[in-house]
Image (cartoon, rainbow, N blue to C red; front, side, top):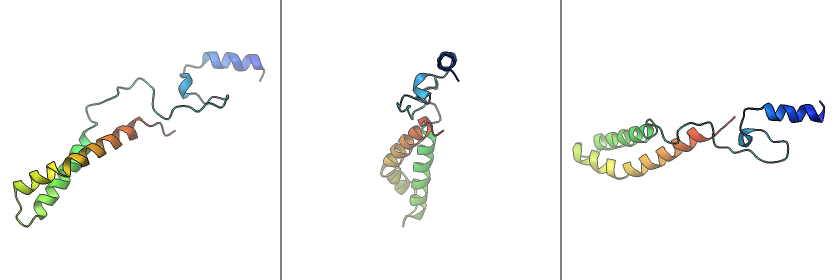
Length: 98
């Protein structure tokens, strides 16, 4: 392939430069850059589900099962479970693993 053909091929590419496998030694970004919204409606669902399931299990397994142990567990460690799971879900969704 001649150098002129290579230059023409690069100009015709629709893929943004950050996503292209650059032959000049630059690393491409590992994060998606395809116009998707940064936050979506479903992003907190795994965190909420995991926190509620953990609190439900702890509330049912408590010496005196009921709503009080459920709500206490939902507050702690439910909030950190929600935050860590939501952050992990966000970065797992945004990373480009191709």
